[in-house]
Amino acid sequence: MRFTAVLRAQHLGFYFKKHWQVQGRRKVMKTGCYSVLNDLGIDIKDPKKYLENFQEKNENQTQLNQNLKKFLGEPEEIKENNYSYNEKPIYLYGDSNVLVEGTVQAQKLLKTLKFDRFPDQIEKNFENTKLPTNIERSFQQSVLVSHLLDGEQQKLAKKMNPLRPMRPFPLEYGITDARKNLSLSTRLINHCERHFGPRVAANRKTINDALFIAQFQKRGSNIRFDVKAETFLVTRKPISSFASNVDEEPLPDISPLQDTISIPNTHFYDNEIKSSYPVKTSGQFCYPHTIMLHYSNLDVKHLFETPVTPDQFESRAMIKGFAAASSCAQSLYGFEVEELPEPVVVQVVQFDGKRVQFGIFQLNTLNLDVTEGPKNYWFRKPETQLYDVCCYTNGRPALTSYNFDVFRLMSVFYNN
Image 1 (tube, rainbow, N blue to C red):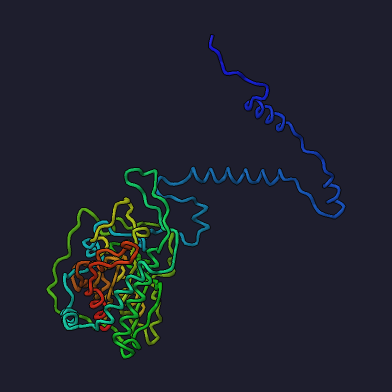
Image 2 (tube, rainbow, N blue to C red; image 1 turned 90 degrees about the vertical axis):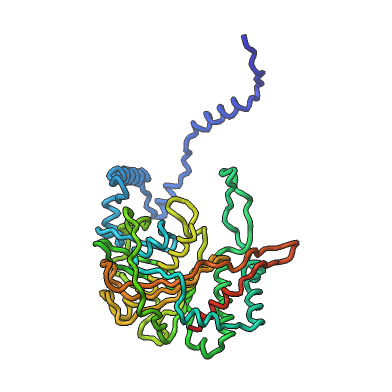
């Protein structure tokens, strides 16, 4: 015989068990509220009727869920009541998407040739550009202000411990990535305006959070770019085309993959808006000049949760440059235009606070279904590092290996 623990009269488990038995037998006492409400002329309804209707709705919803399609299907009720549902699906590329094959896939998708250099005019201006020392030092100080000395303190994203995935690191407060990028881009434009003065700045206007929508067809499928440029510079006169006689090479082959791989396919989109350009073409400042894009690993992710490679980082800038140029062309020449009367040139600057990607997209055609004929051009150079380390060292802000060429090239873009 095994001895058990001694149980006292006030055993805690027995007490709660008896307590719940007593409370479960409680009855609702009549308070006389019905007679008082009737005297006041207030109608009283039985709540059981509403409960029965609620149960019927739950049963109907369960039946609808059971009738879903095997893959990405939607209930018939949602299809009828959702105004954005369309029978024909569309490939929708947004700000958080990235191409899995990088620039090779973007070239195939956009019928674009890539050149690992800038046009001769840009290269010549970059070599001849010499900035005053005070402006260069001022922008170097602006990098410190944007990354370390800003007064904003927000809760930052959780950092996961790779050795212990279920135990993230403690929460940190500081400057968010969006705040750093916005402050850096604003100060970059301000220093360009200081250097060139009102003669150039009067012909530039800045638009924040500009939305571009460009839609086209390829092989019978609808493809739509719905992207945003955090900073958009517009100008009075369009940028003249850089290349007219270029040795056109064949487009890269990514078979057996299609050029729409990793682009989400959906039935829910606004079919009435097929193109959107943030500026009215009837105004003075209607031509695109430069788009400045912000990148953050928290917002841009793979469908497969793998890190974004530098080639995919560049393809994102390439896609947004095409979206800005094509939406402008469709706004100027009509949505059905294919062969443009004049090329549309857009300069692209993308950065994540440390890495900077410069590129120039020249849109020559919107006839992307045919491999022959004129092609679009993408001039670029490998991404550069704005600095090596920017952090507090012994309680003091420190910036090491600052790259002066970044601001020089940005000034060339601004003055173009």
